[in-house]
Amino acid sequence: MKRVLSGIQPTGEIHIGNYLGAIKQWVELGERLGKEAFFCIVDYHALTNPAAYDKDLLAQRTFEAALVNIAAGLDPEKVTLFVQSHVPEHTELSWVFTTLTPLGDLTRMTQFKDKAAKLGSNELIGAGLLMYPVLQAADILIYKADTVPVGEDQLQHLELTREIARRFNGLFGETFPEPQAFLNPEAPRVPGIDGRAKMSKSLGNTIGLLEDERSIWEKIRHLPDDPQRIRLSDPGDPDRTVVFTYLSYFAPKELVEALKEEYRRAGVGTLVVKEILFEQMMRALRPIRERAEALRKDPGYVMDALLEGARRARTVAAATMEEVREKVGLLRPGRVPVYAASV
Image 1 (cartoon, rainbow, N blue to C red):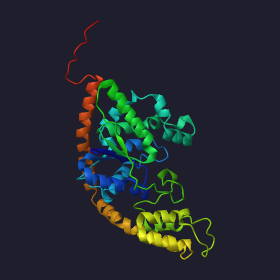
Image 2 (cartoon, rainbow, N blue to C red; image 1 turned 45 degrees about the vertical axis):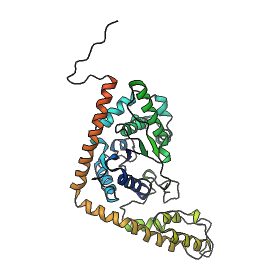
Image 3 (spheres, helix red, strand yellow; image 1 turned 90 degrees about the horizontal axis):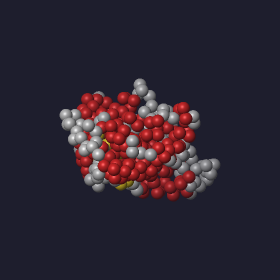
């Protein structure tokens, strides 16, 4: 692993699923790779989500996403943290890739089909939603990243990225690596508070990393219990409730196992377990929340960090784009082309 690239959409509040499933991993990778770890707030991608996109909030959410990542431990002095739209080479390379990507490859993307189905009418489906994975490929390949931390739901997009790299290399010469997926087996797929398989901003089933403590408690208090446990005296199955799933993320293993055993023999009520979960969760999150509050009082630090991150990113991206322009045959400023001999 030499260089990694990963991104997060600023389409709403950063939640514990983002933190446990991605940001903690980013922090660890950043400690290992330093400035070769590129982490991007992908604001252009956010424009493809009509349900979450809000022009009055986009800049605020982008800033907040950066702030939360820094508060959670991502050190902008060590890693390259930046905003996608601050590096225009992303969209330039995306256009080049668009010209090389068959329409059929894009319409077969599972995420496109799922999101298009939710929108219903073709009149509501923006072309950007179709082209999303091409821009994603540009995000990755503009830095010639060899590794991409992803969830299983992004593997199809990453395979398209690899195909785009192969196609470009075949046409214009070896230029891009074929990036590999980094699936961290320890990174959990965090379920939603409604019991669905995944916590998601679009589903509204999240617990925000910086959410008000009283609001978090109300969400925990209303988490679904084992549906087969009717009375307090009934034994329960901890595997049938997200309460214990969340507890396993924040509490010591010994405590979790002891509570599970008590729950199975009806020795502890769900409300008591929820109170312990809240206590353990807040113990883990309070340092992040305190750092976030301090950063809000010093917004210049966050903006300067993003400015410096974009400067570093553009240094790499500009060199890649110059190579791409040369290889695809674009007329370069100040260079008179050599005329091909007439046949």
